Image: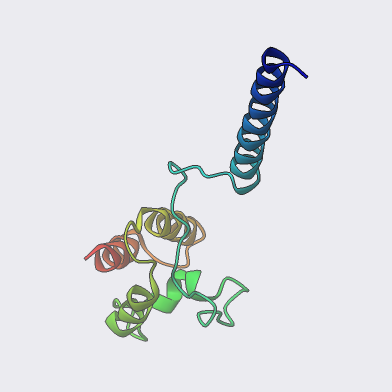
Length: 122
């Protein structure tokens, strides 16, 4: 085999190897979906907050009121201790929906809902 043919074969092998390396890297990126812009997953431990009230557990608005109808700050503190670290906007949005539903159903008053939400925000 002459030198020209040998160099062509050598280039062809290097090109093929490079192509396989690029294909493997691309495949790994697709499999692991290395998307750095993905929203963070909540990290709070809500598993111990299941209650008996209507199957909604800790999301039952009346769980945040004491027997006199005032905000139960101990219950609020317990929820806040288990809230996801960082951005809690998702949790607060869900709580606002729950509080709105509780007001609509007559479970709590609008002023009680506002007081509970403010306590959760602080």
